[in-house]
Image 1 (cartoon, rainbow, N blue to C red):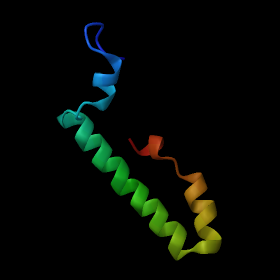
Image 2: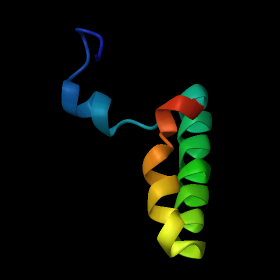
Image 3: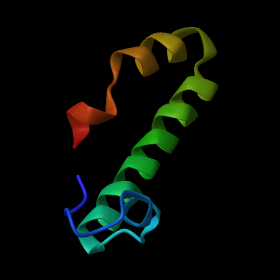
Image 4: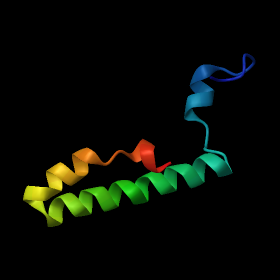
Length: 58
């Protein structure tokens, strides 16, 4: 939630802080690995990708 003194639109559209940037980069990298696994193993890739959750990795 944004601080009460900040317009919610400005808060949502603001740049990420350092911690958020690191977390987003990690999520993007992990997502790319999941997609890569899915594409390499089309039959098993769907099962592996669906069993893996990004939230579990964070």
